[in-house]
Length: 272
Picture 1 (tube, rainbow, N blue to C red):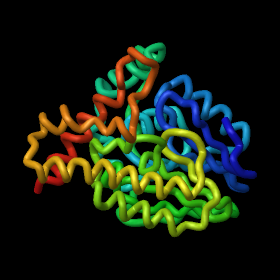
Picture 2: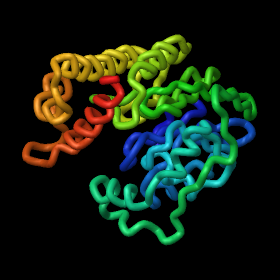
Picture 3: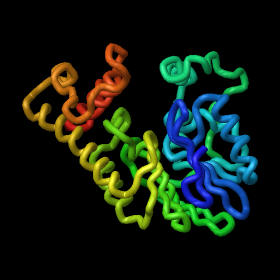
Picture 4: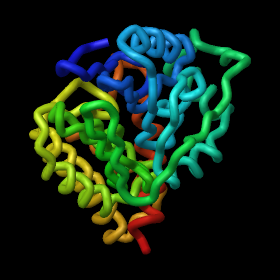
């Protein structure tokens, strides 16, 4: 747990996404939850030492952001599209993800369940708690229902996977909207950006992410324009010059699978 402002704490070493919480005078607001049960329970215990967990905000529906919901208290808030997507999440997919990322956490706890949001919205939403303002912004990109949480009093924004280090994961993305959403994030008056994955960064990385999303999108557009099939794209387009393989030499390249799935999605979206 890292204290990044007077009232904001973030975890950057979870086996999944970065998770955060803000301590207000009237309780705690969490942003996303750890995927691994033991990490989620420890996160809840650490946060509870600083106040009562009043609200949880899910910025997206992917397992590594929402699987820990069931271990938390408070009222759960998310975009309506995120709630609908969580309904379609599969325990088997979560177990497959954890088999790669956190094999020691399997089998899942018997009391695991997918917890659905209690409150939803379709555009933007503002939550006021204590002396803090939480502007939950609709910023479609990494997922169609992606949101970001901007806390002006702390000059911090929590972006989930719209901002990451390295290659954008575009398996469920809306690429053109993603670029617009990053431009929207660039208008915020913030000093600190908590990305979905990777270390704490500042506003300068928003432009880096914009360029990365555009780079991947343009690469697939160019391949489609050449008449390449999806199989050809997956074989020929590696993006290695910009996004080198992850992990030690000789280890499976986890991002290779993500890259192929991202290309398949972009191919369907961009060829229309």
